[in-house]
Length: 175
Image 1 (cartoon, rainbow, N blue to C red):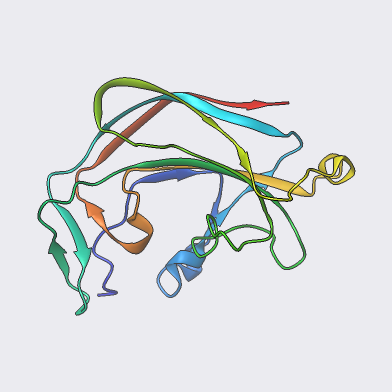
Image 2: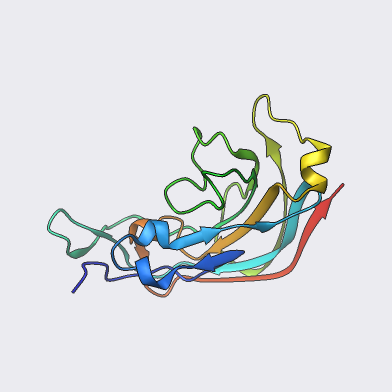
């Protein structure tokens, strides 16, 4: 009915604004919770099995298979400064290179399928010219989100039905 036949399984720190989910799905996810420490890395273990048939929405808004494409997962964290015009991040700006509020990002590289538990340790990479202001940190002017998603492009309603991501022993390492 709303031409969004798939939604990726995900878990994140923040809240979901159900009232706007159908009209503005990328804006319905409010990423972030207040955070009073400087993050260094995100670590843990995962297992991931992609679903058998990667699909996208075609120009007519129908779900169609893309042969030869294998679904990938994503695990990432974003540390950002809260401002009057940006209380949280959403699906339109959570990883945007031009988002001036983002201080640092930790994103898994080479998200390979694995039927066995596989360790990861993702360092936070601070963006150019970004430094933590200790007084703002103490006042709660920064937030963080951690996102785990079974389909990397799930926010665009692309992925494989049946993709399964397990994450365990998640640790947010801080100064």
